[in-house]
Image (cartoon, rainbow, N blue to C red; front, top):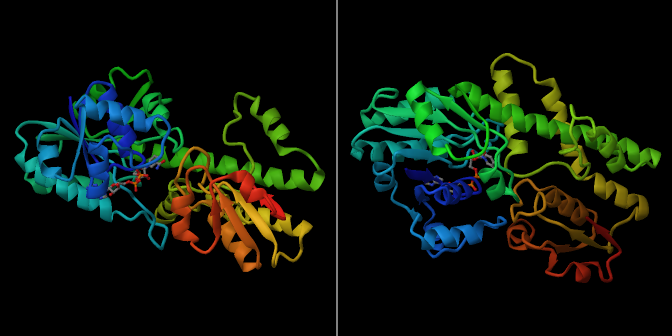
Length: 386
Ligand code: NAD
């Protein structure tokens, strides 16, 4: 099938490369010319394990091409995936500017398309967004949803750090569909993926994504509370997590106590669900606590450090690990950002190390020292925070 993917970020690019690996002809669209140029040269603009190799392969084979021209990509596509960002605004709502603009661009391309095609929202959007915001914009093409074109909502569950593997081997594929024909068209794209496919309504698919991320974030905040108690009692929280996680009803993953969750998804998605519940007259008590435990957790490491050095001024502290989790160069909402700020406010000198995320962190914290060798970071340091 001919597929267009709008947005070549942490979701769009693994998805585009993954579809190309499955034999589809993929056009990846982005407004960022530099990214487009890199992709067409077979270079990967983000760090994700396995992605540079696959990208080079599918670009060389001519199965994937990047472009800034949305209209021609959409005109020739049987299926169009919208995978642009949905960041958080100041009130905690999702900012729909990118998805609305991308939908307008897609509508222009739809005018040129002869015959049926299906538009799929892959970006994370709160329930009813596809029906109430995206479809009316797509219909500005002069075509009617459910008649001239299909619409699906297909949430993405990949994790940064293992994005490609997660995309290619998902636990499940959720297809929210406007009507049966739309769902059939999208199911065909995934026909040779080995994963159960769930077909549902557009708004249930939207909510499944938020409920999944919010539950995972809640697991992390829960184990962090238990971890804080463990520290008081001299118990290893990882042993507790192992014991708890052996129960198949609970499962071990997302029970690693640490500096709290970050990244571009959990903080934004939990906040967006809180706001959405409030707007719908519900009280999101558990989710409010998930966020507040996480906020406190970020700087717990510095509190622990102060038990050893009550006065941090003039001390050199190595910070090992800057991205929000291993295996990625993404520092969005990384606890390391707050930890470094707290150390600086306490007068410490910071020497920071990360295998992939140094360049990104330099934009947030240009004032600290960086090293590409973790041993060098620890040399002559008074303490190291991992
Ligand atoms: P990102 O910011 O990494 O990438 C978005 C890309 O879209 C950028 O390259 C940007 O230049 C491009 N873009 C913006 N407007 C455009 C337009 N009009 N036309 C073409 N390109 C345009 O975002 P991301 O992390 O890939 O997330 C995308 C969506 O997927 C979000 O809704 C996010 O919540 C969701 N999601 C993210 C993850 C994750 O781990 N990052 C996982 C699951 C779902």
